[in-house]
Image (cartoon, rainbow, N blue to C red; front, side, top):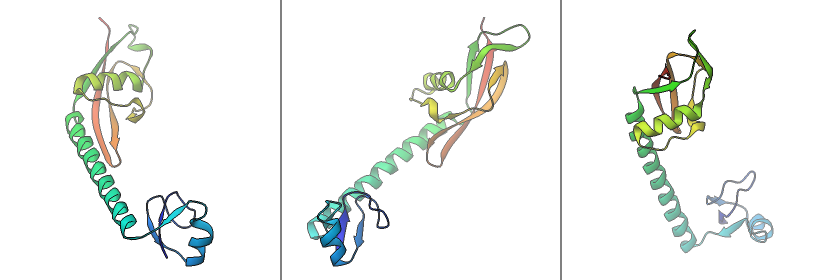
Length: 149
């Protein structure tokens, strides 16, 4: 019997997937517990429409991430922070600082959790970092840390 899963079912599949299961398993376990629905013509059509819409939204999100990656790639983010005469900072540069500066520079919101910094930035100078925008889409950029005037 073909069923469309309403929830993730261990050893069967994930939500909104269409699977062939035995009649008894469907009638006695999946359907009474509300884990699946019979895959009739109307339900199959709805499931296909949902999967096409999901694929379309993922393609749009990936395209937007790639466009943002093209903007970010190779750019230099300048941060002015307090520091001592020896070239050491009072504190360190965090991913939040970099994400805020990157958001201002590109005009697009960048999440601080997606910014990957090298080891702690505690000195003035230039270093490289990258931002993960989408699965498989990353952009490398430079961070220039200057003393606050």
